Length: 497
Image 1 (cartoon, helix red, strand yellow):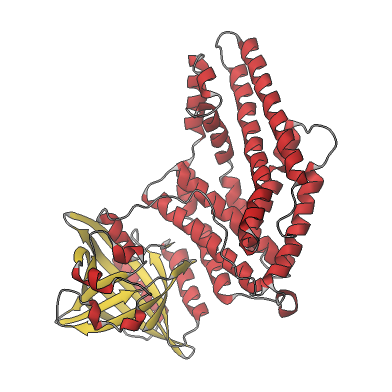
Image 2 (cartoon, helix red, strand yellow; image 1 turned 120 degrees about the horizontal axis):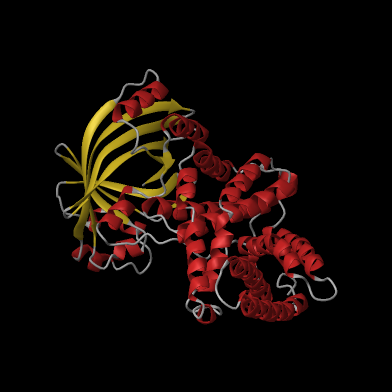
């Protein structure tokens, strides 16, 4: 077995001669080798290998063939890490019995899968390779240029891989990656060749993540380990949605990117409290979120027009107003802005550097050796107290006040995603539910605020009637929010039970 640890960079827009020239410049006196590689990827028709996050291929180079299985791994800031097993073969058809049986998970249907394997797609490319000395090992720099084919469908392939081997310094790999981003406008790649092949063959779908999950923390870990695991999850969430945006731009992908950036920021703020210098990272994330601010307006307008929403039926009775809101909704979307942001050097470098942070895991031992669960209970209590202080005012809260507190509440809920897994799930959900209801209600205030503006700007008949109706809707919403606020403040914190 070898542990594949590599950075993947997409360079489709760069001329091949410029990519090769930069590679040679970075490799200095190391000579380039060139080879042609043909790869066939296999799975069952019902994708049983894919379901176990495995990839099986046969690679041919000249007359030589090698059979490879890659097992489940992870991607952090463009760094791919996964176990890989290779065996020579004389056949162009795979045989799982060639691998050591100890690699398979328990209850893995080995013989059934082996019987049902079929070729799904192929990759065919020229590989330019440099083996660069680094620390006690080698960094293998490769440039792959060719195509992926599935049936009659073909997709261009142009990517740089920087693989860390045999004790090489991971930091050297990140330094090389920076050069490709700043000089060739390279983008970090989160999808392997196999993942792209499955997509091309119609065997998988790239869908945005729209809801975060609780990071699966371990109570006996130290604080540093837990926080970097949470940052790794946030980066994976962000990068997955970034890949969705590149493949098929959508507001859902932008929403997922926004959530990933916000979650990353929450984790970085915890590291900053523990005296880890991440202030530059936080500043850059804030700048990115500034470019994504249009999303809250879009969400508010969607709330008004959603067919299953509370306002759709009533607004349908006023066609001009409804059409104006739909038009505003369309104008609010700024996908091109986000696409241009996502290919900028500073955006790609931020992803790269946060990935490097996850690999390096800097920490002050005296501050970060606390058991994670102990620290999490203390930190959740402090954070929750800030939320309680904001929402414990006497009397009914005004709409503007609610809107000002939304970011505080959202950040608190996201901190829960980072460490809430450590506590009882039922207690956790009972506590979070009314706070989540409040967050949804506050976002609905924005929708009603936009509705009022639209009514005033529209020449539809009966504006006073519409304004009165809007005021009644807002009053009802504030009443519901008041109930949620009282319920939320009465909940027993789950980290105390």
